[in-house]
Length: 254
Image 1 (cartoon, rainbow, N blue to C red):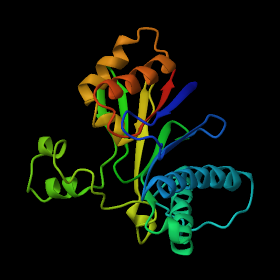
Image 2: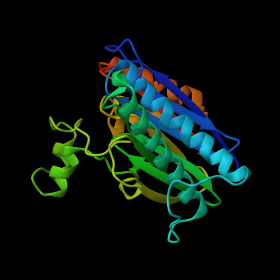
Image 3: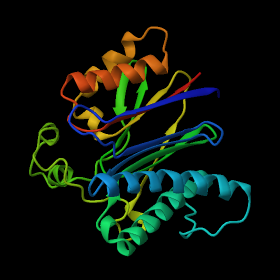
Image 4: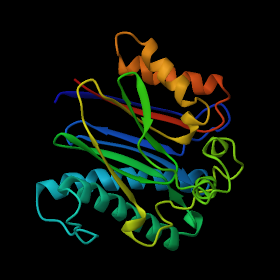
């Protein structure tokens, strides 16, 4: 199935530095968004290291023999195992750098990744960056946030609607650099259908622009230009305050 992609990142209205990183590798069918944490230099370093490591591992593991950092999980597809291994290797590299360089102590990053796996999209997630699927004029969140607010919702302390404005929504319970095994990286699968559109984004987008508004902006671009959609989403987030770095990666299938 043919596809095209577009990615864009903006520091937002408040921050001078951009700690988000993204990747659109059409040759490998790999798409990533990472939102770094730990301070300007270390957050940016963590997100770039995560994205670069996954990209390099995917390419190298397809080209020939390479040591895998995880035990192969038979219940998952080869491509899911591949992107999972790349993400965990990114975690190990971030942790090593955090422990060896004083200025990088405590750094980490979210990551959401998707790789084309035949007729499916193999997805991994750690943290609170998100992946949405837009299909038949409806938007659906395919990933689960790893935040204290989400933990409170799962425990029945707050409602799902309350998670969007909860003061603990930005406190992460998982991040690359701060997990103890690859099982802490969530995996998902989405069957690809014609005219599907996938949006991968950092919290700087969806906290400023809710799902209904995201869908409205997408539908307003009648020619389906990913460039126009991406820039419109980022512009809307900035108009709403731009309180954080804003990153959006779009993949459309035809």
